[in-house]
Length: 306
Image (cartoon, rainbow, N blue to C red):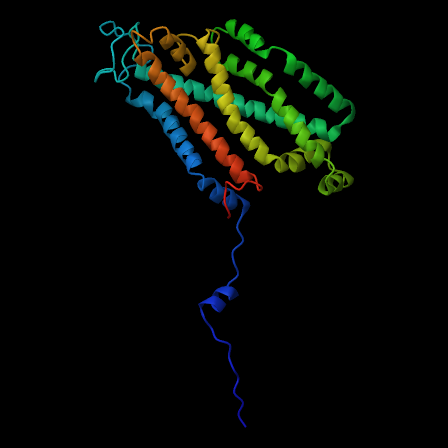
């Protein structure tokens, strides 16, 4: 006696159901949420173009940024001088290239330095607590009420316009507020189970800070770093604009804007070209920071569904 075994129908839906779905990594999830923000992608594109402009520009420029063309003093843009020349005869294209390069170096150096210091100090103060926490917060609160801009201007005026010294001073006075924010977030993390488990296993305090606390506030650190670039660029621009920043023969976007502001009616190209580069830099970083915030924040609806 034969028995007929009824086989379940096999269709595209049941076949797809049998195939296990590949688990998406956190990095891939963040990437997909980031690229959904078109303005953030545009910001990355603009920033990459500016970085390439600062790197490739010196190779294609016809003149060095300190070369003086006495036959072309304050001339408008032309085929010989693409962005025109300054009243002293400098090629403005070469100066904008070097100024963008210098402003980027200052901004990245300051942002990296302030992010690292504020992250370590803020999380360490929250984890160790007690006397360490009180001393750290006292120092932070003291420097937060001190007019740091005056300190920066005073030190910068004696630095000879060296961008390295300016960057170090900006790092020194720039980590206090981010450290205060990071300390607030780390307070809730120090009571988590994995922190208590690591402590009971004999892991040292600094290893807990580096291996357990810092990775859990990584999204905040990334956003702080991105916004720190904008803050550093604006601070350097303000210092150079009033004469306390980068000085000749070195140039930055701030110093070029400060010089161009004095001749905006007679030679407007001296102001508009460096101002355009500065605007593109700050806007691109702001767009990137906005996209990173939406991508890294799981509660944000702007990133869409993965």
